[in-house]
Image (cartoon, rainbow, N blue to C red; front, side, top):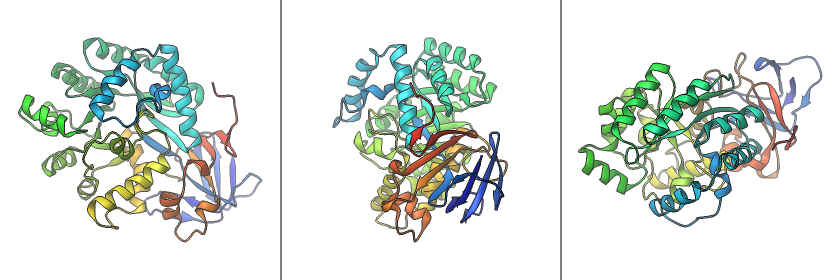
Length: 396
């Protein structure tokens, strides 16, 4: 496959080069060459060609709950959502996952970390859809831990890999957290936990454990390079240093956090100052209410500028990194997140529509002006999934 006369190629390489009027050749599942290449191909003379976006945290199985319980704070929302989730059959969870994948791909996402129940059905949905994924089945007790392990042992895919996920400190016994740590270390896989989402959670953990949340996780050995912490709003500078020291990664979900009134702002600026790898996540559509990572990028940038009273607190380039190369690092996925020779061919194109014109700074245009409806084409693992905004094959 050859992408011809690309108006812009956002490489996201080490130099963050932006190439103009070049071609990009795909052979098999990888990028073979970028430059001037002979031959006919897909005309990209009016398109931005860039790495596919990476969603580091969502729950696609909840897709049918979108818009059903808005304008409610987190713990009240959780009580309601738990009742509704209990009604979701394995068949419905799989249908929801397919619907969520379709929405995400239409909006430019090519890699998704998805955690929910019915892992086997969700994995089938990912495989059928041809989308790169990391999948976990949320662990809360011995029964769900055993189910998670059984699922992980059954995984035999190059495109979709498994992870193990603890729901939270407040919803998971210490012995299960320990088992999760031991298993992920043994199998060298990603482990994930929701942490620091509300002030109440912070106070409750401190009262019960005698430690702040991140301190507690560190005392158990949870923090590590293969660990992903989701939310991290109510944490201290000392906890940030622990995250940095251990190489632990963080998933930032600003839209969901604000919608559920978490009451604070994740200390992104302080994390970046400590060279912590931070990715972006949408969380579920029940608390977002969409899977548009372009919207997430703009929201993240504006939130932290406003919070710090500093327009330069975070840059457009830092935000784009979070949605691409740093997202790949968060999930432990190699050869993904940039457009370079030898990298996985996970690529999207954006139409240079009116909302992106005129282009004075292409990175700023992507972060502050683009949205999911600009997405024209999606190529995942070298296979074209989306063409001119439409799916090539039937999706159901």
